[in-house]
Image 1 (cartoon, rainbow, N blue to C red):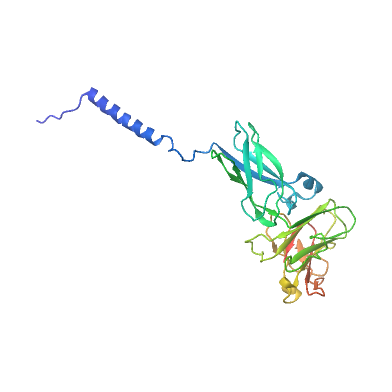
Image 2 (cartoon, one colour):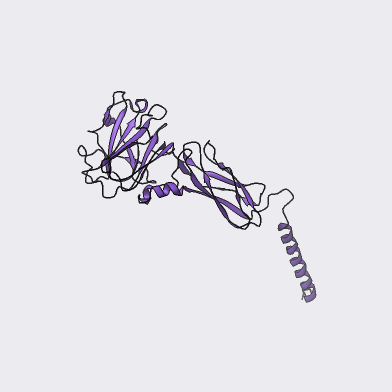
Length: 316
């Protein structure tokens, strides 16, 4: 009979101890500090948010919230930027601000978050119209704080605040009755509100959102925001005349063109159907194109009339 030799209990204990020691050594190697020059793990993260200037927002008090963008601004029109840290630091944090998208410049390019606080809000402006500006925030001389970006928002080409009230309101989005329409600014909207508004109004004109189905090269979008509740009906609507320069809308008859429309700040633009008759919005419509009232002017520019009863954004 063969006998198998088994190690003694003491020997087995020493073997187990040796294995555990080896595993501990491997763990220490994997957990060893990063080599000199390697970036340390960030201890905090920066974030940026933009918002409408409170003074402008107060001017629209009473207007439908869905009609007001999170950031309502235009070229060189003030808005607010809030820069935040995920955790407070024990010393001041200097942060550089720059446009992550777009080719323009910010008016405020550096902010300081004081020690033991987590955020700071500053007045900001941007000098170029764009459909999608993002602000990039990066800590200066600190690779322990991760950078951050804001959500994208529009910067309109122009913005006008109009006094509201019961008096009839007629105004162009460019602040000049759409007399600036031309090849460089091909589309502009003129509102005609015979019953006025219940609040102040804002009109903007700006670039089309790149990549959207109805955004053609060079197109601009007119936006109108105001309180209109109870003032307009399908039989007694407000109207916007989209003035389109002949360089963009010079070919074909008036019915060849379709207005693109939305009734909130975020809804996609959709085609405005034809009205059932002059000056009337159909019972199953929220807005419509009044082709009977639409025409061309003596210069050959298209005047496309859209009827509505709520705040709008529109283009062709």
